[in-house]
Amino acid sequence: MNRLPTYCELEFLDYFFELKKSIGEEEDEYIEKWSLLNKVIHSRCILYIVKYYEFEKRKEVNPFYKKLYKNSNTGGSEIREYDNKPNEPIKSPLALILGNGSLRGQEYHISCDSKTWANIIPALTYTNCCSVDDNITNFNGWNNFYNEVNSPITGIIIADPYILKNNQAINNLRFILEAILSKVNSVKELDISIFVHKDQVPNFGGSYNSILKYINELNLGFSTNFSIHAILKDKFHDRDIITNYTWAHSGHSLDYYNKNNQIIRKTTIDLKSIACIDKNPHIKLIREFANIAKNGKKNFDMLGNGKNNLYNI
Image (cartoon, rainbow, N blue to C red; front, side, top):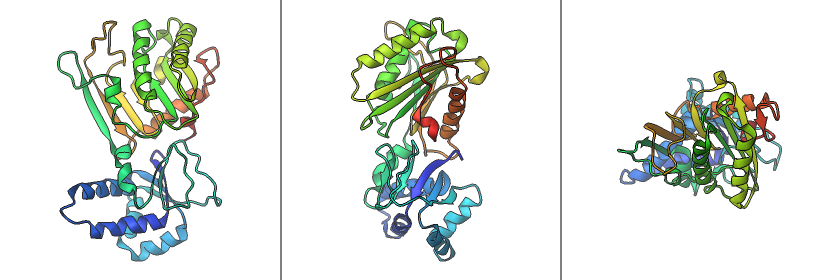
């Protein structure tokens, strides 16, 4: 249930599997990209198959389909029938679309056809791990950290128990938001949800209004829906930044900088795209935060309406 929802036409799989036979040994980069997407298809998805009855036939005679089906019974990607109505759009906030025309994805989905499949590999498998240290570091600010991220974004979740504890921590939150918001394209509305420990927010309402004012002053080309959840210590402990297709985890609170813009923490921050590893906890984490948000009480431990489209996964 925590794998990447992937909607698949057999015509695409036919082409993709046959492609392996024609890739020359000298095409190392092409082989690597094929192998990465093949790994995603076999191990990291819930595969919703269009015309599943045709898949049933193929798995009896085609070795690629046989392997795919065998893997699904031994811990690999789950395989399900996609019984959508004709022309019904796919509404999941995150999805991979592998097809040649009949599937109706959204602008915020990662989509490809038989001609463009190699272009989506970075959005699925990009990783970035940085050491954060004032003396020895390869972390050069949040804009640089997110520079290579080009996957669609319709929702942001930032969880850090202490990111609202004082004005300087809030300034660090602004740096993070600015970097991620600069990567947002082609959306009408974006949802932002912040999760903190209740006893680490000395001015709940003031913090909310300050950040909301900051977001509004950015003059973004889309509307924003902003919420803060101040919850009990036993609900979460980690520091995570989640968008539709990326998850970043920090070993320390995200308040890396002091008022002089100098790094004051020693930790690592590790960003993973949604399909870069087996058993990625990305979707599991979204569901955990969705459950916390669902139980929030407005104007008590939640400010804003508490909604985030990512929760609809």
